[in-house]
Length: 310
Image 1: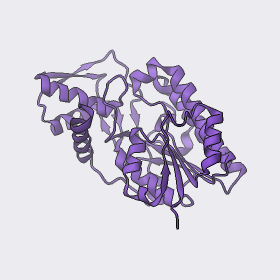
Image 2: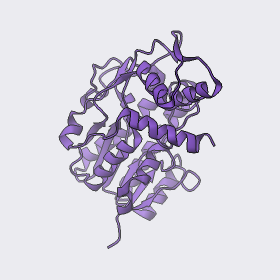
Image 3: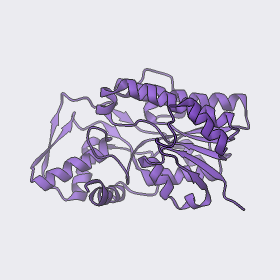
């Protein structure tokens, strides 16, 4: 019997590559077209691709992503491109008769002033964080579209996972495009190489963040793919605990073996002071992440040394 067909968008990104590396990927016939093969901002091309292949499941992991610097520098692209991609993929899948769709969203969808831990029902209850508002609006649109489809067609399993902040193999390490933890790895690696005694941290370093290893998210995603019925319609995916930015800098320094000191630039933006997921629905679903922060940093730094610096 042939394996079911899975269409994975964003297969060349960090999340997509970790999904492709997961042991359960062998249970599927996976289509992971690159942007040259399928431009997801082109609605007609996306419709045609889905109509032709008719996948049994779509995992939507594509999008323009980046940290605070990238979001602040390119708000138009983060809103317009991600909105177009989300709408095109979801509607193309539904029109093609695909009955199972797993949308990967983001915890940046939560209001900036929401009480932590962030519970799924808090979405759209307050003002968004300005530094990544465009990206958040696009992710809210895609999530709501999945919910509306489900409301009109109960048998359509169009569901959304909201991962916390991620890092891991296949990450981006260029500070212009990277998220916090890979940027820290890059900075401290350079500091060690160049013999620098001080590394600068934006803000006071007391803002708290929840970072999960991307391989753990891939594990949750592939478990959901195998049993979409049991997955909640909307579910955070995270650790349920967080660390300060200062803690992350120190943890990376410990792994890399850099023994300098840190300074703080209090004029720099830091985003939300805390962004911690509630993992109640995830726990009820019966899943938790398996890797420690140190294990994740070591695996990511090994990838950085072997792949990203070449």
